[in-house]
Image 1 (cartoon, one colour):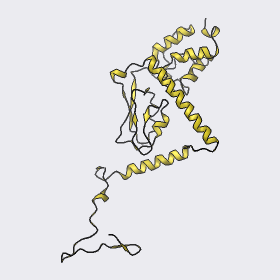
Image 2: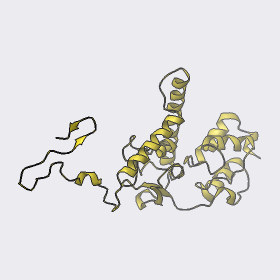
Image 3: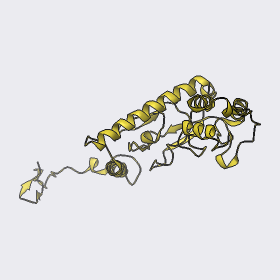
Image 4: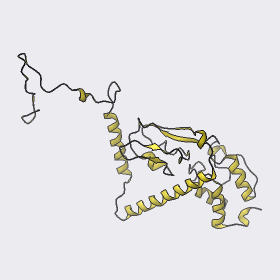
Length: 240
């Protein structure tokens, strides 16, 4: 008998959500793990749409709901080893787009400063890759110490996701009432400025040092050994 006939409402959703890995990767076709759990509880989604949960997760959901296990739907992706995001800090321009995209606040940094991934908090969702304007983020295989995605890590990821969601809702509420909030236009302007700074730091030889740092002195000795005044700048002032 389908468990929906015995357990209903929030209890069923919570039980399903407890099985899901809480990577918040959206590969199931829903914006987060909880909405997917709600869809399963309503009979609107199948139990085989979660690649991070894999076959083990499908079997647990099947047992909970008294169904037969099904193969993972290839349309949602494939099961694989846990991978974590890695940022090439030398190439990072400090645009903050990856920070905004991370569903569990596993990336830290500030505008115009390099960002870094807290690997122990990363869920491997790879949602930070598409918004990066300089492609400085890659997914790498998790080290052995972090290779197992445990129930404890899933629970911690859920808490961070819920805390982040609450914070974003609060920020949006302040924006709706006239408070300060960096909207899309402001964020896009910030990204453009960051990319311009990154280009300014490049030299023809790729040294990362501006050529003007090696400009010739403004004063040159004349043939008699005396130093000549530098040419006057527009406005009649001389450089000194």
